Length: 80
Image (tube, rainbow, N blue to C red; front, side, top):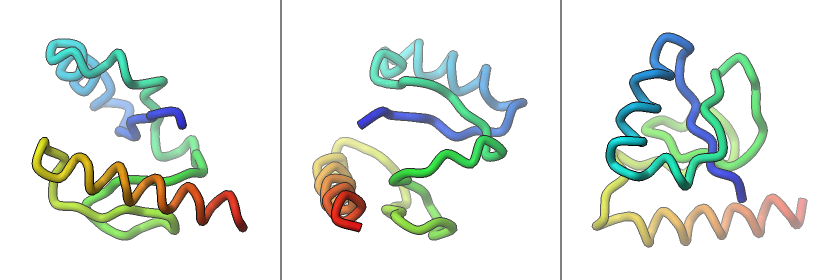
C-alpha cells in the first residue's frame, strides 16, 4: 500500500517539513489535496469517507492497532 498524506494546499509545506525533520517522509509516497479525491483506506479523526479508521491520534501506543485495522479494511476492500 502507498502512504499518502491529505492536506490543504497551504499546509503541504508544513507537513513536508515536519515529516522530513522527523524522518517520516521516507514512508510517504505523496502529499495530496482533498480535491484529488483519491480512493482508498484513510486514517482520520472523523468518519467522513467509507473505509476509514477513526482515531484521536497516531502514536507509538496505537500504531500496531491502526496497522491491523488498515490491513483488515484492505482485505475487505479487495473482496468487494
